[in-house]
Image 1: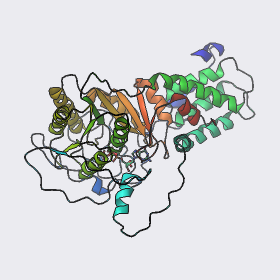
Image 2: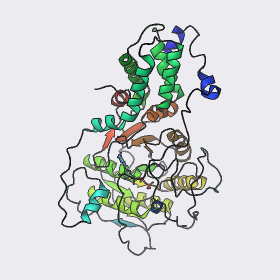
Image 3: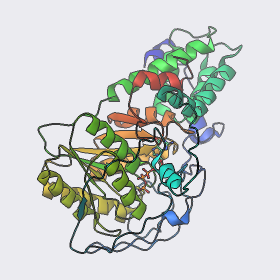
Image 4: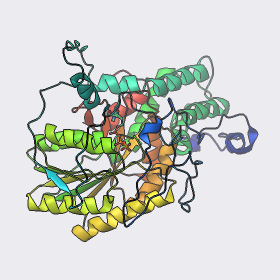
Length: 448
Ligand SMILES: Nc1nc2c(ncn2[C@@H]2O[C@H](COP(=O)(O)OP(=O)(O)OP(=O)(O)O)[C@@H](O)[C@H]2O)c(=O)[nH]1
């Protein structure tokens, strides 16, 4: 660390003591993440038991255990540390009447003409608007740029960092005590101990016993965060040699998987790629319908089965269909699952195994969708989904909301997994390639 040398061995004498025993530092990574609103019970309908893998009935919320364990935990039906916010808008408000289950197998729905252009109106709101005939379309307020939405979304984190920096350094020289205080500020902003130590080391370097301008601290912070994020800012690439290129999308409940598939489908089809979508979230009927509408909007066939069907079988069929119809890419949705639910993670492992039966070197990409509002819990999501499903890249969604964006730096520092995209809204265009410098400046509270 650059700054450690400069500090002549007197750096942060009380850091670990304060963290693990001193009691002066607030707990940085509280496992019980605040859940803005309870998840509606209707979001967790009784889980059907598709043969051959029967699934347990819904039960109350599990304890947040960051490891795979036997299938004895209850299914969350109530607010949960890993069930982030219910959606700002319902995903698909009314459940459409579904056709009789077709026992014969999956349905590859022919693409329908996309609905009338709707700007950035989220899918759920489109559906709601359709339910109000005669209602005059509300004038949409002008949209902010994606960067403005990212900066706004990160303002909770950046304000606490900025205020913390000002509070720590106003009228104080840089010494062990101020660096310890700054470290606390950074840990509270979810950046993690390793990142916080790295940043304070860089700030301390050559500045001991001197005054330091808070803006200079922000600039160093942005530089250090960017240094960690730049190597993981890897564009998502489809390998044309793999046809179809199989993409599996995984994550906890409500993180934004289906929406991300829709946005990604729009991006890839705009690039001229032919797509097939696999409605592998067979647990939630609305997710199947949601994907069907995204398929219509991107003119992509959607392979679906009735709610409760075997997800692994659906994935197999989606790949077969994509091969048959000459698709370049098949995007396969999966049901949301908490990473500490062993039986649900086993089911995901089975999906991966069956995908390999359909295409031996598939899945070619496994995207873990992380909700930026969950904070520290993202670390255990990455660890366990990576182990079970072989995650190849990350998408962080809801960075336009009240995001806890510092966690992305902590995740990058710990796992060094590629971050392909960030989600900055619910609309079809609200998926941006991840740009390390923009993100770092936004989290540091610096204007562009
Ligand atoms: N503000 C905002 N909302 C988002 C973003 N991405 C997804 N959402 C919203 O988050 C909610 C959940 O999204 P889904 O795509 O249904 O999530 P999911 O992971 O498929 O959900 P499950 O299938 O239940 O696990 C929806 O209301 C989306 O519109 C984002 O980047 N920003």
